[in-house]
Length: 436
Image 1 (tube, rainbow, N blue to C red):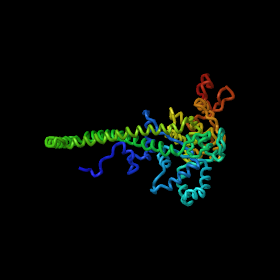
Image 2 (image 1 turned 180 degrees about the vertical axis):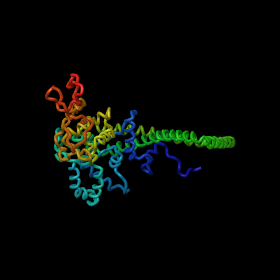
Image 3 (image 1 turned 120 degrees about the vertical axis):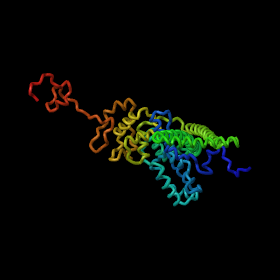
Image 4 (image 1 turned 30 degrees about the vertical axis):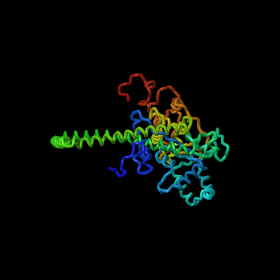
Protein backbone atom coordinates (compact mmCIF):
# COMPACT_ATOMS: atom_id res chain seq x y z
CA UNK A 1 0.00 0.00 0.00
CA UNK A 2 1.31 3.44 -0.90
CA UNK A 3 2.36 5.69 1.95
CA UNK A 4 1.21 8.78 0.07
CA UNK A 5 4.70 10.26 0.02
CA UNK A 6 4.88 10.45 3.82
CA UNK A 7 7.79 8.03 4.16
CA UNK A 8 10.38 9.53 6.56
CA UNK A 9 13.49 10.86 4.89
CA UNK A 10 16.81 9.08 5.47
CA UNK A 11 18.89 10.40 8.37
CA UNK A 12 21.48 11.88 5.99
CA UNK A 13 18.81 13.99 4.27
CA UNK A 14 17.21 15.27 7.48
CA UNK A 15 20.15 17.59 7.96
CA UNK A 16 19.01 19.55 4.91
CA UNK A 17 15.50 20.27 6.20
CA UNK A 18 16.28 23.99 6.23
CA UNK A 19 15.78 24.02 2.46
CA UNK A 20 12.24 22.63 2.51
CA UNK A 21 10.86 23.09 6.00
CA UNK A 22 11.50 24.12 9.57
CA UNK A 23 14.93 23.42 11.02
CA UNK A 24 14.84 21.06 14.04
CA UNK A 25 18.07 22.50 15.44
CA UNK A 26 18.66 25.95 13.87
CA UNK A 27 22.09 27.52 14.05
CA UNK A 28 20.65 30.37 16.13
CA UNK A 29 20.51 27.90 19.05
CA UNK A 30 24.31 27.98 19.22
CA UNK A 31 24.15 31.29 21.11
CA UNK A 32 22.33 29.53 23.98
CA UNK A 33 24.34 26.31 23.74
CA UNK A 34 27.57 28.32 24.00
CA UNK A 35 26.55 29.48 27.48
CA UNK A 36 25.83 25.89 28.50
CA UNK A 37 29.25 24.74 27.32
CA UNK A 38 31.01 27.50 29.25
CA UNK A 39 29.08 26.54 32.38
CA UNK A 40 30.04 22.88 31.95
CA UNK A 41 33.65 23.84 31.42
CA UNK A 42 33.59 25.94 34.57
CA UNK A 43 32.35 22.85 36.47
CA UNK A 44 35.47 20.98 35.39
CA UNK A 45 33.80 18.86 32.71
CA UNK A 46 36.00 17.89 29.72
CA UNK A 47 34.11 19.92 27.09
CA UNK A 48 35.29 22.38 24.47
CA UNK A 49 33.71 25.74 23.86
CA UNK A 50 32.44 26.80 20.46
CA UNK A 51 34.86 28.71 18.24
CA UNK A 52 34.27 32.39 17.56
CA UNK A 53 35.72 34.01 14.44
CA UNK A 54 36.36 37.76 14.39
CA UNK A 55 36.22 39.17 10.85
CA UNK A 56 36.84 42.62 9.40
CA UNK A 57 34.44 43.37 6.55
CA UNK A 58 35.66 45.39 3.59
CA UNK A 59 33.71 47.41 1.01
CA UNK A 60 33.62 44.75 -1.71
CA UNK A 61 32.10 42.22 0.69
CA UNK A 62 29.55 44.73 2.00
CA UNK A 63 28.29 45.52 -1.49
CA UNK A 64 28.11 41.82 -2.38
CA UNK A 65 25.98 41.24 0.72
CA UNK A 66 23.57 44.00 -0.32
CA UNK A 67 23.35 42.55 -3.83
CA UNK A 68 22.64 39.11 -2.38
CA UNK A 69 19.91 40.48 -0.11
CA UNK A 70 18.25 42.19 -3.08
CA UNK A 71 18.06 38.87 -4.94
CA UNK A 72 16.47 36.97 -2.04
CA UNK A 73 12.77 36.27 -2.56
CA UNK A 74 11.61 35.85 1.05
CA UNK A 75 11.35 39.03 3.09
CA UNK A 76 12.81 37.39 6.21
CA UNK A 77 15.64 35.54 4.43
CA UNK A 78 19.23 36.08 5.56
CA UNK A 79 22.61 35.77 3.95
CA UNK A 80 25.09 33.19 5.23
CA UNK A 81 27.09 35.92 6.96
CA UNK A 82 24.02 37.31 8.74
CA UNK A 83 23.11 33.81 9.93
CA UNK A 84 26.63 33.27 11.30
CA UNK A 85 26.58 36.59 13.16
CA UNK A 86 23.19 35.76 14.68
CA UNK A 87 24.48 32.34 15.79
CA UNK A 88 27.49 33.87 17.53
CA UNK A 89 30.05 31.98 15.43
CA UNK A 90 31.17 35.21 13.73
CA UNK A 91 31.67 38.71 15.12
CA UNK A 92 31.75 41.30 12.36
CA UNK A 93 33.85 44.47 12.73
CA UNK A 94 34.80 47.30 10.42
CA UNK A 95 36.64 50.61 10.45
CA UNK A 96 34.50 53.75 10.26
CA UNK A 97 35.98 54.21 6.79
CA UNK A 98 33.92 51.18 5.65
CA UNK A 99 30.61 52.89 6.44
CA UNK A 100 31.72 56.07 4.65
CA UNK A 101 32.98 54.30 1.53
CA UNK A 102 29.91 52.06 1.16
CA UNK A 103 27.63 55.09 1.24
CA UNK A 104 29.79 56.90 -1.32
CA UNK A 105 29.48 53.98 -3.74
CA UNK A 106 25.68 53.69 -3.62
CA UNK A 107 25.15 55.70 -6.82
CA UNK A 108 27.77 53.80 -8.83
CA UNK A 109 26.65 50.41 -7.53
CA UNK A 110 22.98 51.24 -8.17
CA UNK A 111 23.67 52.09 -11.78
CA UNK A 112 25.79 48.97 -12.29
CA UNK A 113 23.44 46.44 -10.66
CA UNK A 114 20.11 48.14 -11.37
CA UNK A 115 19.18 48.40 -7.69
CA UNK A 116 17.41 51.58 -6.49
CA UNK A 117 19.60 53.83 -4.37
CA UNK A 118 16.84 54.21 -1.78
CA UNK A 119 16.68 50.44 -1.34
CA UNK A 120 20.45 50.24 -0.89
CA UNK A 121 20.40 52.96 1.76
CA UNK A 122 17.56 51.31 3.70
CA UNK A 123 19.11 47.83 3.44
CA UNK A 124 22.49 49.10 4.64
CA UNK A 125 20.93 50.78 7.66
CA UNK A 126 19.48 47.43 8.68
CA UNK A 127 22.58 45.42 7.82
CA UNK A 128 25.09 47.65 9.59
CA UNK A 129 23.47 46.85 12.96
CA UNK A 130 25.37 43.55 12.82
CA UNK A 131 28.73 45.34 12.41
CA UNK A 132 30.77 47.17 15.06
CA UNK A 133 32.56 50.19 13.63
CA UNK A 134 35.56 51.87 15.23
CA UNK A 135 38.16 54.44 14.09
CA UNK A 136 41.74 53.48 13.36
CA UNK A 137 45.10 55.18 12.92
CA UNK A 138 48.13 53.81 11.01
CA UNK A 139 49.70 50.76 12.63
CA UNK A 140 53.21 49.43 12.13
CA UNK A 141 54.08 46.62 9.72
CA UNK A 142 51.30 47.19 7.16
CA UNK A 143 52.00 46.56 3.46
CA UNK A 144 49.30 46.83 0.78
CA UNK A 145 49.21 48.10 -2.81
CA UNK A 146 46.14 50.33 -2.53
CA UNK A 147 46.44 53.02 0.14
CA UNK A 148 42.64 53.04 0.55
CA UNK A 149 42.80 49.52 2.01
CA UNK A 150 45.15 50.40 4.86
CA UNK A 151 42.24 51.09 7.24
CA UNK A 152 41.06 47.45 7.03
CA UNK A 153 44.52 46.09 7.85
CA UNK A 154 44.87 48.59 10.70
CA UNK A 155 41.54 47.43 12.13
CA UNK A 156 42.58 43.78 11.92
CA UNK A 157 45.86 44.40 13.70
CA UNK A 158 44.28 46.56 16.39
CA UNK A 159 41.83 43.94 17.73
CA UNK A 160 43.63 40.84 16.47
CA UNK A 161 40.83 39.76 14.11
CA UNK A 162 41.27 36.38 12.48
CA UNK A 163 40.93 37.69 8.92
CA UNK A 164 39.60 40.37 6.60
CA UNK A 165 36.54 39.25 4.65
CA UNK A 166 37.09 40.54 1.13
CA UNK A 167 37.07 39.88 -2.60
CA UNK A 168 39.65 42.62 -3.25
CA UNK A 169 42.82 41.13 -4.76
CA UNK A 170 44.95 43.92 -3.29
CA UNK A 171 43.90 42.96 0.25
CA UNK A 172 44.20 39.23 -0.48
CA UNK A 173 47.82 39.82 -1.55
CA UNK A 174 48.62 42.19 1.35
CA UNK A 175 50.46 41.50 4.61
CA UNK A 176 47.18 40.90 6.48
CA UNK A 177 45.31 37.62 6.78
CA UNK A 178 42.29 37.59 4.44
CA UNK A 179 39.61 35.14 3.31
CA UNK A 180 36.99 35.31 0.57
CA UNK A 181 33.19 35.17 1.11
CA UNK A 182 33.21 31.62 -0.31
CA UNK A 183 34.68 30.40 2.99
CA UNK A 184 31.73 31.95 4.85
CA UNK A 185 29.04 30.84 2.41
CA UNK A 186 30.05 27.17 2.34
CA UNK A 187 32.25 25.58 5.03
CA UNK A 188 31.68 28.04 7.88
CA UNK A 189 27.89 28.03 7.53
CA UNK A 190 27.94 24.25 7.10
CA UNK A 191 29.92 23.95 10.33
CA UNK A 192 27.45 26.14 12.24
CA UNK A 193 24.39 24.23 11.04
CA UNK A 194 25.80 20.77 11.68
CA UNK A 195 27.33 21.76 15.01
CA UNK A 196 23.91 22.95 16.10
CA UNK A 197 22.52 19.49 15.28
CA UNK A 198 25.32 17.78 17.26
CA UNK A 199 24.90 19.95 20.34
CA UNK A 200 21.10 19.97 20.06
CA UNK A 201 20.84 16.18 20.05
CA UNK A 202 23.42 15.94 22.84
CA UNK A 203 21.59 18.51 24.96
CA UNK A 204 18.26 16.78 24.32
CA UNK A 205 19.65 13.40 25.39
CA UNK A 206 21.33 14.84 28.48
CA UNK A 207 18.22 16.82 29.37
CA UNK A 208 16.06 13.70 29.02
CA UNK A 209 18.25 11.79 31.46
CA UNK A 210 18.20 14.66 33.95
CA UNK A 211 14.43 15.15 33.64
CA UNK A 212 13.79 11.41 34.05
CA UNK A 213 15.95 11.35 37.16
CA UNK A 214 14.10 14.35 38.61
CA UNK A 215 10.73 12.73 37.89
CA UNK A 216 11.77 9.51 39.63
CA UNK A 217 13.06 11.51 42.60
CA UNK A 218 9.79 13.42 42.90
CA UNK A 219 7.73 10.21 42.57
CA UNK A 220 9.69 8.65 45.43
CA UNK A 221 9.05 11.73 47.60
CA UNK A 222 5.31 11.72 46.87
CA UNK A 223 4.97 7.99 47.56
CA UNK A 224 6.85 8.46 50.82
CA UNK A 225 4.28 11.03 51.93
CA UNK A 226 1.27 9.13 50.54
CA UNK A 227 1.98 5.35 50.60
CA UNK A 228 -1.53 4.50 49.40
CA UNK A 229 -0.50 5.80 45.93
CA UNK A 230 1.76 2.78 45.67
CA UNK A 231 -1.31 0.53 45.74
CA UNK A 232 -2.84 2.53 42.90
CA UNK A 233 0.36 2.12 40.90
CA UNK A 234 0.44 -1.61 41.53
CA UNK A 235 -3.21 -1.91 40.45
CA UNK A 236 -2.55 0.06 37.25
CA UNK A 237 0.50 -2.07 36.55
CA UNK A 238 -1.57 -5.22 36.99
CA UNK A 239 -4.15 -3.98 34.48
CA UNK A 240 -1.47 -3.11 31.92
CA UNK A 241 0.25 -6.45 32.42
CA UNK A 242 -3.03 -8.28 31.90
CA UNK A 243 -3.67 -6.27 28.73
CA UNK A 244 -0.15 -7.06 27.51
CA UNK A 245 -0.66 -10.78 28.04
CA UNK A 246 -4.03 -10.76 26.23
CA UNK A 247 -2.64 -8.93 23.18
CA UNK A 248 0.43 -11.14 23.08
CA UNK A 249 -1.68 -14.30 23.22
CA UNK A 250 -4.02 -13.08 20.47
CA UNK A 251 -1.68 -11.20 18.05
CA UNK A 252 1.79 -12.14 19.17
CA UNK A 253 2.44 -8.43 19.84
CA UNK A 254 1.18 -5.86 22.33
CA UNK A 255 1.25 -2.12 22.90
CA UNK A 256 4.52 -2.57 24.76
CA UNK A 257 6.25 -3.97 21.67
CA UNK A 258 5.00 -1.01 19.62
CA UNK A 259 6.27 1.50 22.17
CA UNK A 260 9.63 -0.25 22.39
CA UNK A 261 10.10 -0.43 18.61
CA UNK A 262 9.08 3.21 18.18
CA UNK A 263 11.58 4.33 20.83
CA UNK A 264 14.35 2.25 19.27
CA UNK A 265 13.64 3.71 15.83
CA UNK A 266 13.85 7.26 17.19
CA UNK A 267 17.08 6.50 19.04
CA UNK A 268 18.69 4.94 15.97
CA UNK A 269 17.55 7.84 13.78
CA UNK A 270 18.92 10.43 16.24
CA UNK A 271 22.21 8.56 16.56
CA UNK A 272 22.59 8.35 12.78
CA UNK A 273 21.89 12.09 12.45
CA UNK A 274 24.34 12.79 15.29
CA UNK A 275 27.15 10.83 13.61
CA UNK A 276 26.51 12.38 10.18
CA UNK A 277 26.44 15.89 11.63
CA UNK A 278 29.61 15.28 13.64
CA UNK A 279 31.53 14.18 10.57
CA UNK A 280 30.22 17.10 8.49
CA UNK A 281 31.03 19.65 11.23
CA UNK A 282 34.57 18.33 11.67
CA UNK A 283 35.28 18.33 7.93
CA UNK A 284 33.85 21.84 7.52
CA UNK A 285 35.87 23.27 10.41
CA UNK A 286 39.06 21.72 9.04
CA UNK A 287 38.38 23.52 5.76
CA UNK A 288 37.79 26.80 7.61
CA UNK A 289 40.99 26.38 9.65
CA UNK A 290 42.93 25.71 6.47
CA UNK A 291 41.54 28.91 4.91
CA UNK A 292 42.36 30.99 7.99
CA UNK A 293 45.92 29.68 8.06
CA UNK A 294 48.29 30.03 10.99
CA UNK A 295 46.82 32.42 13.54
CA UNK A 296 49.13 34.26 15.94
CA UNK A 297 47.94 34.14 19.52
CA UNK A 298 45.86 37.13 20.50
CA UNK A 299 47.16 39.34 23.26
CA UNK A 300 44.95 39.97 26.25
CA UNK A 301 44.76 43.67 25.30
CA UNK A 302 43.37 42.74 21.87
CA UNK A 303 40.84 40.36 23.44
CA UNK A 304 39.59 43.01 25.86
CA UNK A 305 39.41 45.63 23.09
CA UNK A 306 37.38 43.27 20.92
CA UNK A 307 34.95 42.51 23.75
CA UNK A 308 34.41 46.18 24.63
CA UNK A 309 33.98 47.27 21.01
CA UNK A 310 31.55 44.43 20.29
CA UNK A 311 29.43 45.24 23.33
CA UNK A 312 29.22 48.88 22.26
CA UNK A 313 28.58 50.01 25.84
CA UNK A 314 30.02 49.89 29.35
CA UNK A 315 31.22 46.53 30.64
CA UNK A 316 32.28 45.53 34.13
CA UNK A 317 35.30 43.34 34.71
CA UNK A 318 33.34 40.17 35.37
CA UNK A 319 31.33 40.75 32.17
CA UNK A 320 34.54 41.07 30.15
CA UNK A 321 35.89 37.86 31.67
CA UNK A 322 32.60 36.13 30.88
CA UNK A 323 32.80 37.28 27.25
CA UNK A 324 36.39 36.03 26.96
CA UNK A 325 35.29 32.64 28.28
CA UNK A 326 32.43 32.53 25.77
CA UNK A 327 34.95 33.17 23.01
CA UNK A 328 37.05 30.18 24.08
CA UNK A 329 39.83 32.06 25.87
CA UNK A 330 42.29 29.41 27.19
CA UNK A 331 41.93 30.41 30.84
CA UNK A 332 43.38 28.13 33.48
CA UNK A 333 41.94 29.92 36.48
CA UNK A 334 39.04 32.38 36.34
CA UNK A 335 40.39 34.34 39.29
CA UNK A 336 43.77 34.89 37.62
CA UNK A 337 42.05 35.93 34.39
CA UNK A 338 39.94 38.45 36.30
CA UNK A 339 43.05 39.98 37.91
CA UNK A 340 44.89 40.14 34.57
CA UNK A 341 41.91 41.83 32.90
CA UNK A 342 41.71 44.34 35.77
CA UNK A 343 45.38 45.21 35.30
CA UNK A 344 44.94 45.70 31.54
CA UNK A 345 41.96 48.01 32.07
CA UNK A 346 43.88 50.18 34.54
CA UNK A 347 47.21 50.27 32.74
CA UNK A 348 45.99 51.03 29.19
CA UNK A 349 44.86 54.66 28.72
CA UNK A 350 42.45 53.67 25.95
CA UNK A 351 40.03 52.29 28.54
CA UNK A 352 37.87 54.71 30.50
CA UNK A 353 35.77 54.04 33.59
CA UNK A 354 32.24 55.37 33.82
CA UNK A 355 29.65 54.88 36.53
CA UNK A 356 28.23 51.92 34.56
CA UNK A 357 31.50 50.18 33.66
CA UNK A 358 34.52 50.28 31.38
CA UNK A 359 34.34 51.79 27.90
CA UNK A 360 36.83 52.27 25.07
CA UNK A 361 38.01 55.74 24.15
CA UNK A 362 37.42 55.57 20.40
CA UNK A 363 39.49 58.69 19.77
CA UNK A 364 42.63 56.94 21.00
CA UNK A 365 42.07 53.50 19.48
CA UNK A 366 44.66 54.04 16.79
CA UNK A 367 47.34 55.17 19.20
CA UNK A 368 50.46 53.13 19.66
CA UNK A 369 49.58 49.83 21.30
CA UNK A 370 51.16 49.26 24.67
CA UNK A 371 53.37 46.16 24.88
CA UNK A 372 51.54 43.11 26.12
CA UNK A 373 52.94 42.02 29.48
CA UNK A 374 53.75 38.37 29.96
CA UNK A 375 51.97 36.22 32.54
CA UNK A 376 54.87 36.63 34.94
CA UNK A 377 54.99 40.35 34.23
CA UNK A 378 51.28 40.71 34.89
CA UNK A 379 51.65 39.16 38.32
CA UNK A 380 54.77 41.17 39.12
CA UNK A 381 53.15 44.48 38.10
CA UNK A 382 49.82 44.00 39.87
CA UNK A 383 51.01 46.02 42.83
CA UNK A 384 52.10 48.83 40.47
CA UNK A 385 48.70 49.39 38.86
CA UNK A 386 47.80 53.06 38.65
CA UNK A 387 45.95 54.27 41.74
CA UNK A 388 42.18 54.53 41.69
CA UNK A 389 40.76 57.80 42.88
CA UNK A 390 37.30 58.46 44.26
CA UNK A 391 34.70 58.35 41.51
CA UNK A 392 36.81 56.18 39.20
CA UNK A 393 36.84 52.41 38.78
CA UNK A 394 36.00 50.25 41.78
CA UNK A 395 38.83 48.43 43.46
CA UNK A 396 39.29 44.97 42.05
CA UNK A 397 40.83 41.95 43.69
CA UNK A 398 44.32 43.19 42.84
CA UNK A 399 43.75 46.71 44.21
CA UNK A 400 41.81 46.09 47.40
CA UNK A 401 44.88 46.06 49.62
CA UNK A 402 45.65 49.59 50.75
CA UNK A 403 48.91 51.13 49.65
CA UNK A 404 50.89 51.91 52.76
CA UNK A 405 53.67 54.47 52.87
CA UNK A 406 56.98 53.15 54.23
CA UNK A 407 57.87 54.47 57.66
CA UNK A 408 60.68 57.00 57.77
CA UNK A 409 61.81 55.95 61.27
CA UNK A 410 62.08 52.59 62.96
CA UNK A 411 61.36 54.14 66.35
CA UNK A 412 58.33 53.39 68.46
CA UNK A 413 54.90 54.04 67.02
CA UNK A 414 52.96 57.13 68.14
CA UNK A 415 50.90 56.70 71.31
CA UNK A 416 47.61 57.08 69.41
CA UNK A 417 48.48 54.14 67.11
CA UNK A 418 49.59 51.61 69.73
CA UNK A 419 46.79 49.19 68.79
CA UNK A 420 47.90 49.02 65.15
CA UNK A 421 51.62 48.97 65.89
CA UNK A 422 53.66 45.99 64.81
CA UNK A 423 55.35 43.69 67.25
CA UNK A 424 58.71 45.42 66.66
CA UNK A 425 57.25 48.70 67.95
CA UNK A 426 55.45 47.36 71.04
CA UNK A 427 57.29 48.12 74.29
CA UNK A 428 58.39 45.10 76.32
CA UNK A 429 58.56 47.04 79.64
CA UNK A 430 55.97 45.95 82.21
CA UNK A 431 53.13 48.40 82.70
CA UNK A 432 52.72 50.14 86.01
CA UNK A 433 49.68 49.21 88.04
CA UNK A 434 46.86 51.62 87.35
CA UNK A 435 48.40 52.95 84.13
CA UNK A 436 46.28 53.13 81.01
